[in-house]
Length: 202
Image 1 (cartoon, rainbow, N blue to C red):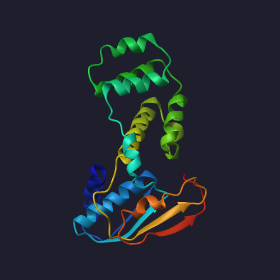
Image 2: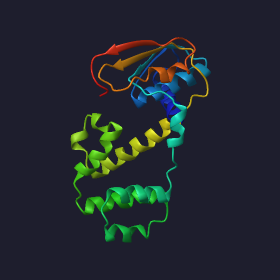
Image 3: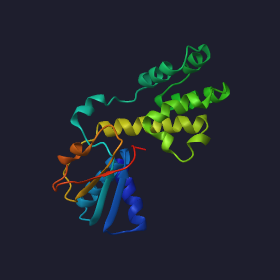
């Protein structure tokens, strides 16, 4: 909801009033849906909403949402790094959650860790679709790792607070393993128009 609100602020700087055409792919479809929901609440006009191979809200994913805590982040990092006395020693001086990742990035850069190891982690969040994926350094890869983790956690806990009236157009990639169309039905007043397009999720 917060991300959608921020996008709306930026949209309105460019185009203060509708009709708006809103399109979102993958997790972006969730954000696009919430943008439309909020615009409707503001009595703005939406001409078009497209969800491209986007997983919809599911109540059974809420249980997967876990808060990011000091302990959970230490455990996450520890699960992917071999035992290293030096990083364990540095963690003794980390006082809060916001310092864990800067300390981690400094450590990985000093040790000249293969950035490919981190890039392998961020592919599970679809980050290999980034145009500059091949050029990402350690710091940038860690940034996108945490963007992916945060957004995935947010989507897992997202249930729209109201249905939308705008007709949603759902585009399914023919080679996607799953169809997410049914996940959206309960949140749309009008029937969803669906289409199948050639390609996989990416």
